[in-house]
Image 1 (cartoon, rainbow, N blue to C red):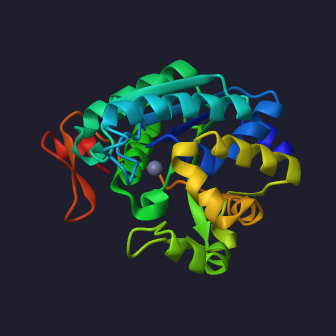
Image 2: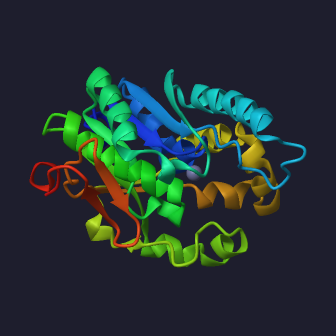
Length: 265
Ligand SMILES: [Zn+2]
């Protein structure tokens, strides 16, 4: 609990509704219980997150997922939420300077002590996750005071081994992922207590469009065990990026169309 109170004000920045709960639902609930302010940001409405787009056209699913996210955050005690309003599956096409400026504005307004988001791997390898992780690291670098901690969600080798069959069965990861980290690399590793875990499961269950099938197939107990761990590494310093920077996919680095010396390090 001391570790949690020490996080201070927490700002979470995620790509789709449900990312926040899967990767930091326990952290958010415990931080709220400790009396901390928690602000959650979601880049897209996850409007393409369906295998049945005829029944769930994008507009309808976006509305549904907004309702589900609100219910989920209610369970976790999180009352402050912002949308960035980008399109699901297209985050890596958003001009990064714009997205970074939007997140930097929120950092300016919230003054978080801790920012939680994806690492460069995007946890599952999803390009939206990777884009949001990059934007957030750059925004922290631009806008946050030096004391601000940037925690990036991580996967341990133990967890990946323990859940390999389940993860493969449900296609959780893009081929080539996850990137696993050693326990000694982690800055924060939560194994949720039973009460917090059941609250996290309830929060995830509120996002039924994404979780109902999975919970039914896995069974409640296995599903709970699967989401009981939340691991984070402390981020490496991000490159300073400017309005004219762009992400070079091929070489996996920022490049600048302006004055490189001023914008990259
Ligand atoms: Zn996601």
